[in-house]
Length: 103
Image (tube, rainbow, N blue to C red; front, top):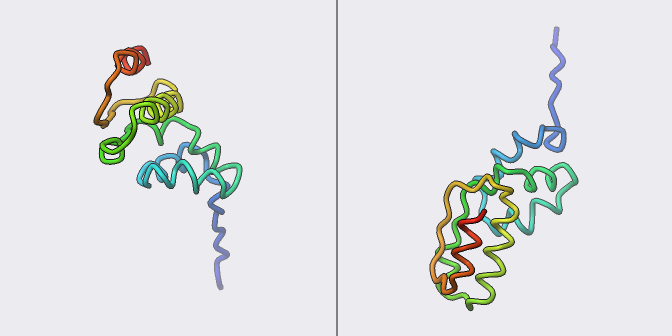
């Protein structure tokens, strides 16, 4: 007798489980690819797990200060207070440091 195996679809996994999986992807994939796959994946990357560690150090080395400030604010806002680790280079304004500290 064959037992019927019920597989669960990726889009049916709970957002927290997906978030834990997605946090291992690159920041570019989390921002541009994953949210476009389906609504549940978009909800998962909007949750806190993908934003606990933000590493834009390499990218920020060649980034204009205005762009860096704008991207940093956007990413920290996405973390909704769950940010534990931030890697960035080239912060030049006191406002950026204040925003990070306040969040």
